[in-house]
Image 1 (cartoon, rainbow, N blue to C red):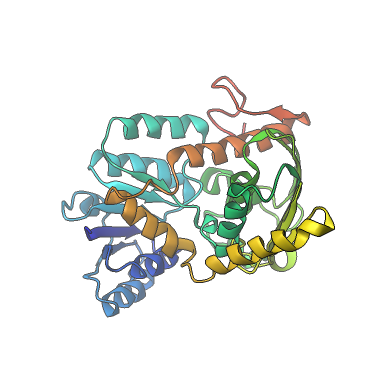
Image 2: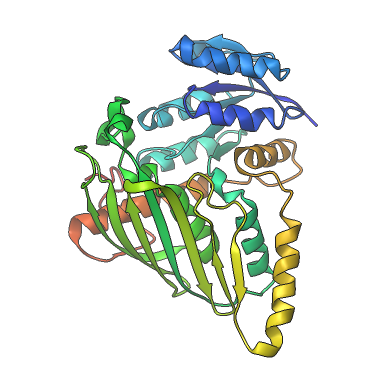
Length: 362
């Protein structure tokens, strides 16, 4: 097992990434915390050193990229900086981990794909909500054939963002955050939706700014038809009294519902209820209980995604989240904004000449 040296670039959400890497200290050594603000980065440096990492502080990204001892660049910067940092890291022959949204358009992700395809490096987008025990149990039940045909689902992303949240200069602006609640908040729940129900075939959308005086949307009502024929409603707001997320899936033979955990809706406990003839419900419930029990002790979130990254780097497993996964997420964002702008149902997949391919805010 190879121990890879990581540079975390950005000490905001980078603090959460650090915890995930430290949970996999046999696979990763956090070599650098890079941030322009030393006072924000230094506590992370000390946290990593206390756990045995040989961590240093840096404020010069170019120097970090040119450091041949660093294997992985973990990008935790504001969204508008993602694309160029990814390209620079690949040019310097680094593996890349990057927060969402990966880049600002389908055109940009296709540019990244072209460079990635000509390299021998790995690029892993971050979708840590996938790696929850409740989500894992549901996917196993589907794989076992217990769920049956997907019918309908509801997705709630009801979070609370007061005006002080937007004191961070890049938030709430198209040029720097690249979008509003659809991009920065509901993106994970929509990824989980597609993970469970498969790809979106069409979307209708109505977006609005109703909570705070910002450029981007903070409320949305979305209607999806999935490729399977299933129907989905998604409700998004940053004006909830508290932060909560909830997903509810109705299949032919199973109904599954998450808890309300906003920052890890994939985590257990989920509620699973079998549907069918009375004489078979007991057997189905026994399979459900056994499947849920098998996931109780799994690590979750960033720690699990980074564990899987380590396996991929060692060649013992596939990369857990791929560029194609990120592209599907950005394609859905593009379709949502197009549907809102036109008032029409937008069909996926989108072509290169689709409105918004080069800039979803157009």
